[in-house]
Image 1 (cartoon, rainbow, N blue to C red):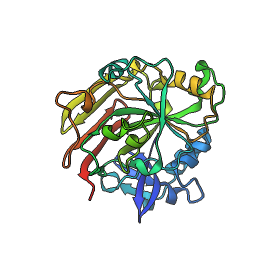
Image 2: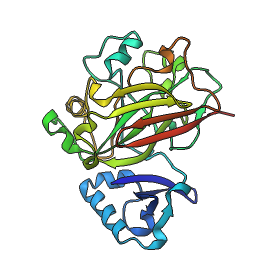
Image 3: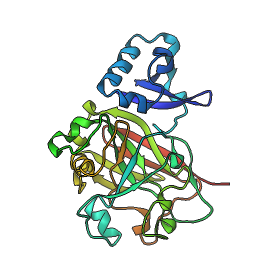
Image 4: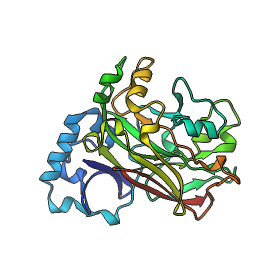
Length: 288
């Protein structure tokens, strides 16, 4: 199952992808959840309800997929936990040793942007970088969960571009500011239910392409902390809630590690592709 968030009269609205069409769930199921977090909080029952509504949807609920405008999949996750340095080669290209525990930072809703929408480049710095990343969605409460049971708590996956203003990322020991400039975190295009992918989304090709040139090319099997291990380690410390989002880190090949650095600039296009999930594409635009 593939779910997206599209614009309907200025309101983010849930849609279920069905080939070349999108089923507007606000029409197909008027009493159902109004956002992706609402579906996730219902777990498999929420996904089953959306699927059932799609099967009986009237023609009035169907929209041409090519004509929609995407929003980020969600802006209101209870927690958006992001991993840094989760591929050994990426840690090395930045001069770091591989971590012995996930390197965690958080993102806020105002930093996110939808597929196809401009990734904004602040006038404060030239150092806007790309990072191709896998997303895992938590579908039920996880507290002190074993690695063996961890994937029972994951309901789906998606793509993320952890757009990073490197200059500001390095101004303090914590990375939060450089990772939270407005509209620098493309998120989508679709939520893909876990049953469509290998367990833990393992073994999937992951790439970034800047203006069509491959910049990162790796496989999710090379994560230091796979999805299940990450859930085990984090849930030992904190409660992971239904609706939480895990952003799983980026492979080597980022712009700052290149000579000369490959910063994103106005007019560029950045694409993130993960096998079996899709392509997340955004133009780069200078902030006014």
